[in-house]
Length: 334
Image 1 (tube, rainbow, N blue to C red):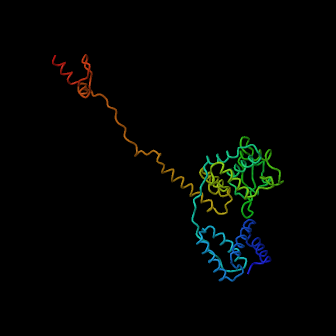
Image 2: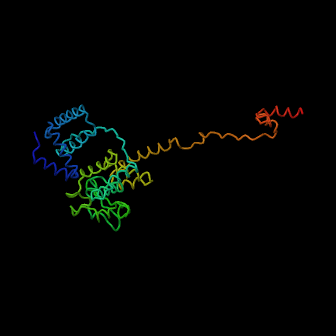
Image 3: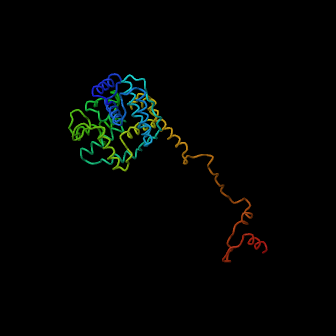
């Protein structure tokens, strides 16, 4: 039977108060559960029946080509629902295949910045957004949540509201904060910001920028730069690997990124290890064992007559050459 509105409201209250879900996570969970209900799964069924229906649905999705990663979104939503109903049923996550992250190069980001070099407020905003993302390593939602009063202009500190309402304070690089020759935050706020929202730092013509609109901005600029694979989180990957390559301690990187578990930060270490592997296997590295011995320069021997035997000398008045041995015999006969 379908879930009534009162039960949905009880689930929302439980998810917020007991499970402490963030607003965006809660909305995504409800969307997944309603999708399952729409496709014939009775969320109010008993444990055995619910389990059978769900795994039949997963089997159908797998035959249609769904990935384990996609099914795990449903698994998480169902486990939250079972927790709300007090069921002992817990669906096991599928083992996802690790996809190597594609990290933008510094030259790629230069092309991305050059794609919005115009003089309009939109170009200036987009350029400042890209600069902020790769200088601070923010998530898309974190950047959209930024307010004007989240920036401490005196001490150079940014207040960032991360996942689950967690707050962290991160120093802002000086060039991003008040740089003159770069798309700094000060220049953007002073000259180019659209005043369509009193609080929001980054705005559109209708108000605060949304994560969906932010992704469309980055995708548009990436296509213009010939880099269609870049998305907002790519700039966060660049930020993390850039710090680690520069020798920054992984604990510091963890705090800057706002990772609750250092294992998440450790993913970027695998990327750095790959870089190191390529570095030590570089064919252009010099190796003493691969050096070829230098040829010795031949000097004429002390016995000049023996040396002349191997040379061809011109004979005066002959108009040609003859071996030096014949010339010596001629001299001796006279």
